[in-house]
Image (cartoon, rainbow, N blue to C red; front, side, top):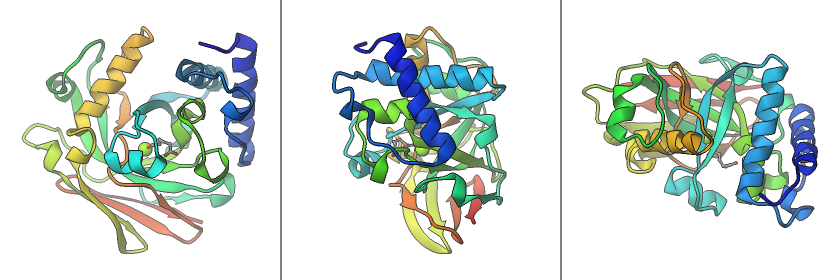
Length: 261
Ligand code: 0L1
Ligand code: MG
């Protein structure tokens, strides 16, 4: 790490302020060119620590930049990980208030809910054996950086642009499903804006959970039973505006939707 604890704390203040006020900022490396990826995760961890101290609940984790489509869209090559807070969950079919966000985009994802703890150097089979169910999800991302212009250090500090998440559809145990082959269709206002199969995420959506568990292990942590894991957008993210309605249809898992007002 290149930055001191007091700078990490200052950067957490900046991100927190931008999130609370829905006001964009410039990327953190403009003022701190030495900032490293580990510093970005230190800012994210400090934010998560503060949010939990404020009574907010950690419900799970997210992988981002896990598909080629997302990497190409953002011009970054490395998967990133972030935290999911319970108060950012939106019920299936409910409405997101645009005034609380800067410039949201949506991603269609396959989510996992774990039945048992996962830790260390796990495999895809370990993840599937520990999975209670898989289900369709929409992630609403909202980079706090102006025009979604950031580098890897900054976006990690910004909790990988996490803003809201929606899960729903017909959750199913993964047994008997080949998650690589699940077709995913994302629609905005009834128009198809993205299509992919589950394998778009690292060759298998569970591979995103494998990488998440390894990332947690590097920090001396495990993925607890009962965690929700968003495995990452299968297509590039799509901008939304007030009045839009987005659905993600996942083969065998049903449909999840969200509106923007
Ligand atoms: O969930 C994501 O894929 C976000 C990770 C990259 C940040 C972004 O696209 O804003
Ligand atoms: Mg995502």
